[in-house]
Length: 375
Image 1 (cartoon, rainbow, N blue to C red):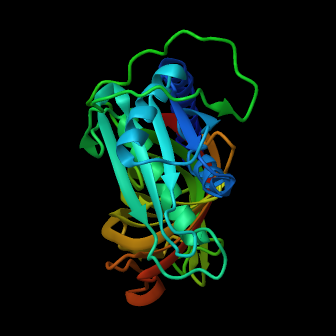
Image 2: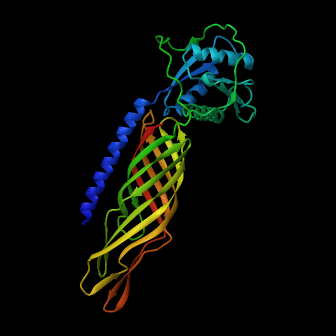
Image 3: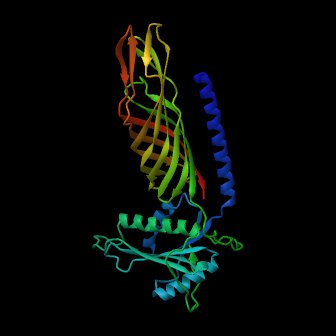
């Protein structure tokens, strides 16, 4: 079978996988329901953390509504009562609010209430260090937004957060003033997803190039990636199909192909709404296949056939995506350790002459597209 035939078949296989991924993404987006989340503000200074929450949840299936409280915060029991009432009034699944008891220190207490399940998560963030100006620092705001993101993902997956809470009394409180014009009355949303919902999934199609010190332009070819994401940990499988590389030597031309297959794991670190950095690790197998179709009759090359070796190494991915997080352009860089070396030699008139030797450390670059398939 010629390499052109192999490439054509691989291209058809990649196209079929991409079509399946797009179809699954559309089907998943239509089936999943968004969480309705109320961000309950008690002070204008809390708008900074609200913007961080918007950025951290931009790729989640959530519908945020900001509601301004009628007055300052009271005791925690009264807060819980009012949060339960607010969820009913706004047909919300989750109510989130913040409390900074002392504006002079870097500490913020956040509350995430899920009234339908009678759960309340209370978490303090920040080191409590004195602040030169009122309000929590940037790192504390980002940490609070990350906690809210993790809590919303757990709620969407059907997991329990915080502690079981059931307010005993419901005192009448003036209705809140929304920051935007009230939307027309809507029917209550469907119930929250049942426990046992799976993680989010992703599929990637990319072009990969690695250098082993032998191929003049590196080993290049298409690649695929697929796997689950357990926020913020991402797992998956990868496969690279290397195209033939022609290697010119003093005794003739050799052909060499490099393929890879294995597992990868990474830690997704978002920077704002559009950029995401994912450091990680790959482990798998590398397969070399050498051919010698362009040698003189009195010259033979050894060894012939294939070589299989372990692959292990770090990688980092930079993703730049759409505001809804469904699509990302990704750039990858890594360093593969391939312990077994491929040493090719020529047999010329009974004498052995070295041809080439692959490197154990092989840098790698890639560019591609990644699609989030939803929950």
